[in-house]
Length: 136
Image 1 (spheres, helix red, strand yellow):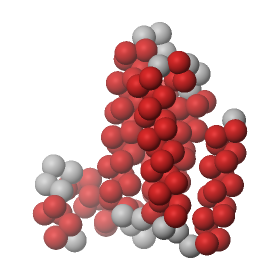
Image 2 (spheres, helix red, strand yellow):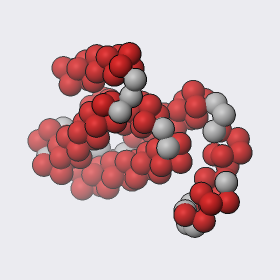
Image 3 (tube, helix red, strand yellow):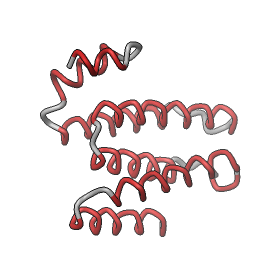
Image 4 (tube, one colour):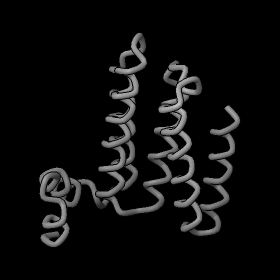
């Protein structure tokens, strides 16, 4: 724990909280992060695309921070897929704006890379979910 804390000085309290309370139950951890993503997307300003993009970047930064804490490819896939789904469901015309469109596409590439490192059964399951996400 101390070695991991030394690497992340600015986020060490959050990492310590994760390691002590949430590392054992990844399902509960994922649920809490998803709730936080939902909360942040609800707070997003839909009237101004500039402010919406800033909020999207902030949500993605927080999601990446939690992914780094878990150090698990399965958690990474789950959270990034949920982020992409939330972005699509936000009601924002993200396809029309290059910045938000590129953010979405970069996350899809990250998801595909993470899926490749999982077990075959999980690869198939998450591959199906990814196809459904892209079709919607």
